[in-house]
Length: 346
Image 1: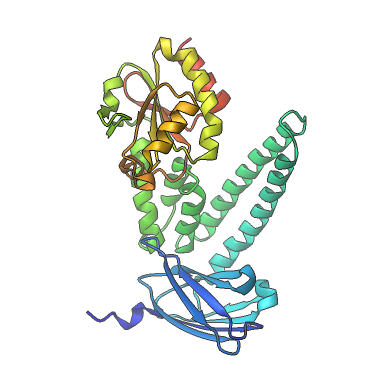
Image 2: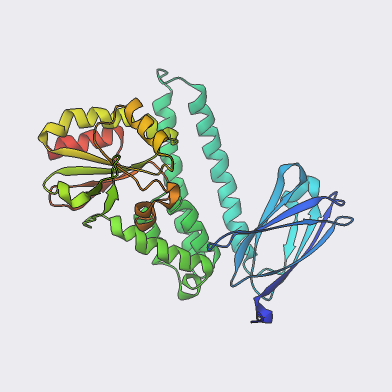
């Protein structure tokens, strides 16, 4: 069946200094990114594509240079500038580009600030007195980031850029309550965009593990025997999504070992759900880190059926279930987990 004319977009690109260089074009479709590779001719490149709705496009140029913009069906986009100064490129013809530029400007400042903090943290040892100061700075950054998204959503509630922003800040790096809150502030126009539809789907999935929900699942354990979460009803259970290849997960494991040793005899259990795809790596990590609790996995990596069902976008991710089977907390780590368990078992 022929596609409608208004499904098409056209890009006319003129970048001085590009010459006959290769340009990678990525259409960031939430249903699956699409890639094209084209060679320019004397700084000029023309490209036509199909887009079922407004989408983000990323252009990658030689020497690791890139730029991005939004384009919608039936738009003819012109991109003009110089390869040695892509920050000053002029992009015309996109009705959604002003919103994208507004967010890009916000994010440039946020990213620079975060980068400075992480460099400082990397340069100091754990014993140095400056670490708490920069950890507080990181918390400040997080508040500023949330405030920035809040301001953006309120200014552009109808833009398809906005659900993309919400997804990138609160779904990819999971803050499900904030994702749900800001999704609710979008207009129907934004919700019906490709990114709005994807965000709505993520919000619905994440609601399965929101505070107060009573999840249950079945997955095979390390011996291949099916384990059911509800078999632990009456216990306080931490469901921990992790993987042998996940550095932050492995760093957190000693805290879990400590918590398990302190409270297991009082009714605390842990169920580790691995996003590994190789059983040998999974079992080796369990033994190496001395993780003596219940472990399950279907060994499908990021396609783990539980990870998909519960919208797990990053690891470690966890939720704490009380003795009645109800979720009472999420993503507690280190001291925060210890304090919560101390409160429950006092």
